[in-house]
Length: 126
Image 1 (cartoon, rainbow, N blue to C red):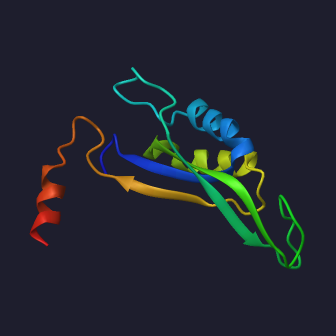
Image 2 (image 1 turned 90 degrees about the vertical axis):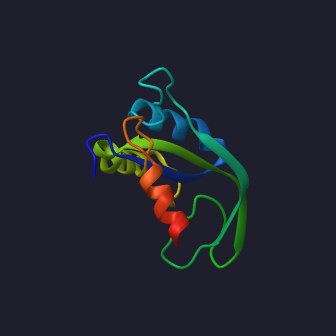
């Protein structure tokens, strides 16, 4: 992995907590692009999350054994590899859900010094 390796972090959050998630990401170095010319960059997708809380759970909303639904936002942002572990811990600490969904994906070629041509050629040859 290169020194400037980047990851994409995805977190699903109640719409009511979207600003808190965005702020946590930005304050911890996520979503910075163009050699610092842009900060707090993220992509948001709105939808609905659903769950059925079981015995022993402490749901954010709702009752046990009953399907619940809430407006949620999928927040996607970039994160330097060196900060991923810390940012995931921070997101878990500020997230209102007992079990937040946080996804982490490696990104190829996001750093302007890295060429994506080899990765694209490998995909095309399959």
